[in-house]
Length: 320
Image (cartoon, rainbow, N blue to C red; front, side, top):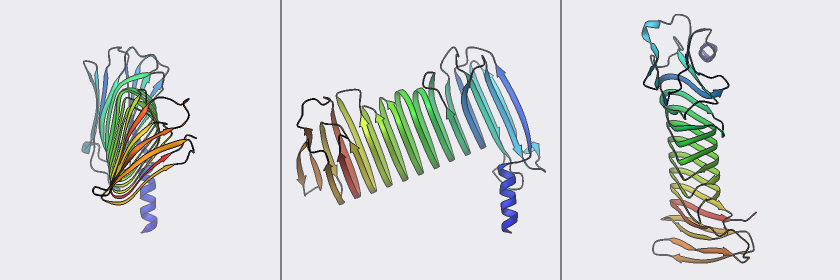
């Protein structure tokens, strides 16, 4: 039985049969691409050609009945709609779709991407020098991987799975949501940054944002190195059950740590830091203000809130 299961899984990952459709759009007024996929993968990237290319692969095992599924690619008034309707994933047919979207590097206007994948994954390989419009993607079960993107706004969500975001520039804001799973981000530059995890892990490093909100219901929240464009910076890390950790090298910090039960810790490793701390036993709040003795540091100030309802709240200040 084990051998049979492994054999079926292998055939599903690399099915021998497939049908491919390739559509080319040379129009220069395209403004949005929307996709709806039941089971499969969506890849978005750029190429040097002067037209938008949509490649649609239907992959399946022998014995698949084409009448049980339908796939279409349409364009209407600058909107490209990609739809793939298939039965739920099963070992009997192993059918899934692969969609590849290629945008010209020198296209006339930024294109917005919206879409939903029921089971599968979305991969976006952008280029920092090429702006796109808004990106609004949902993968109900699976994962989202975004790299080197320059977008007006970014919104990514998953019910069960993970989201990975690296080297992303967004003029408006970045919103990341996962119900069960994890969010990991690195090298994000934006106006406002929001990450919400119901159950799992939320880890972020090298953020540049004026407003940062990281909320985890049950799990771990970590924010490492946050700076801002403005003189005033607001950072909020909230974990209901688990641990909250914030690592900063900002020389001017106004902080507020709170929880109902657990540990509260402010650790300023650099000897130049000077912190005035107060503790309110009634509501279990640790607050205060930190600065450094030397006057040659940046003048921006950070307003910090770290709240863990049941667990550990920690701020680490280190200029190195």
